[in-house]
Image: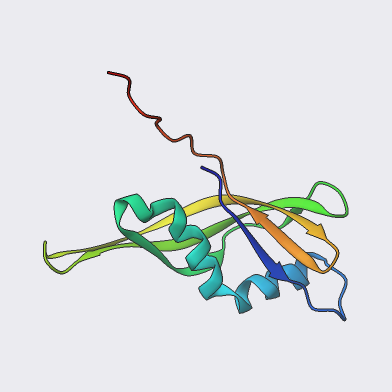
Length: 114
């Protein structure tokens, strides 16, 4: 499994570290949804997403950064409410006016043969 997410870049600015950092801060809730897809089988949600590292550009349109977030497990029936701080490396690509985010690849276990 490898999740992707697209955020629209502001039309007036060039995409540099500062503008991408500001864009990530403005889209904190969307980033939480994006990261939560990685933990849906655990029943956890990602909240309070923050940039945890500098934005590293590989070239003019690609790079990576590290996001830090609260990973919250909650189940009222089982009286579970746990929270821990976690992080994940995200790669990005700028295509036109879109910032395409790509999370890490986590292999999924396939069907077992009988």
